[in-house]
Amino acid sequence: MTGADDGTGPPRDPAQAPARTPGRDPADGPAAESESGAGAASVSTHVLDTAAGRPAAGVPVTLSARPGPDAPWTRHARSRTDADGRCSGLPALPPGTAQARLEFAVGPYQARAGGGFFPEVAVAFATEPGEHYHVPLLLSPFGYSVYRGS
Image (cartoon, rainbow, N blue to C red):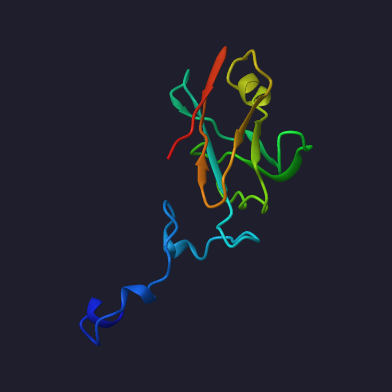
């Protein structure tokens, strides 16, 4: 802290404060910037096994992006859910991304958990620059649900 915030100097001018992206902690470092200057969209996810009542660890996840509905998908990143069912460190989407897709390879996880009907789950969604998209997957042997979380 500086200035009036910590009592050691003159009051700080609020106009000089760094801009804060909604939903981001400034301690995480600067947001990725797109060519237009708006922050790049970011994506996070986690997988919860609703039948077992616990996170689904070890599920491979692929994040893809495309600039519009008629463009081909381009693989952007791969990850795997951790012990808490979360994928950490997915990179910000490329500038110009209009749609993103998360693909969850749930077949091996479900085989370890006693079997399931869906070998994979794919969800595509529209994106806007500067927005964060948290897209959890709730998984059970014969059904699943996804939603935009916070």
